[in-house]
Each structure stands twice: as C-alpha cells, then as structure tokens.
Image (cartoon, rainbow, N blue to C red; front, side, top):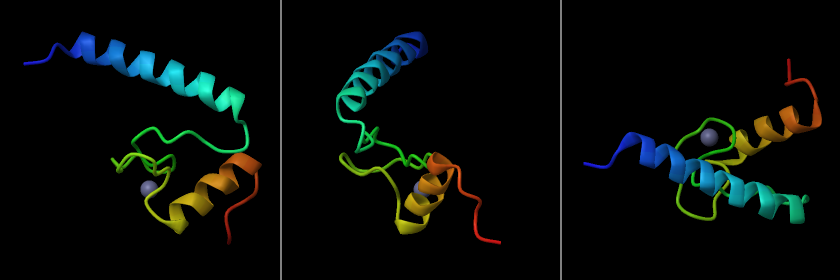
Length: 68
Ligand SMILES: [Zn+2]
C-alpha cells in the first residue's frame, strides 16, 4: 500500500520538474498525464482529451470568453 504522503511528495516533485521544463519552453504546455482542462487521466505526451478540452483551456489561458 503506497503512503499517500509519499505520493503527494512525488507528485509535487514531478510538477516542479514540469514547471521548470515549461519555463524553458513557454510555447508548449507540459503534458502532466492529465487533461489540462478537465483533469482526466491521459496517456503520456497528451495535454488534453480532445480538441474541445484544448479549446476550452486555450480560451482560459488567453482570457477569452467562452462562446455564448
Ligand atoms: Zn479533458
């Protein structure tokens, strides 16, 4: 049984690494293993479930309003 505190620590370290990577490459978001929009688990290398999630995320990132 993994310790939840250990898992949280691993997750924090992983996010720190990703933050460093994305700071070096600001144009492309880092794939975290989860959809950046809705948080669904994803295969490695993917940032979003589909184009809808990507579009929603991009709207938030750019401060645009969602379509009415
Ligand atoms: Zn999603």
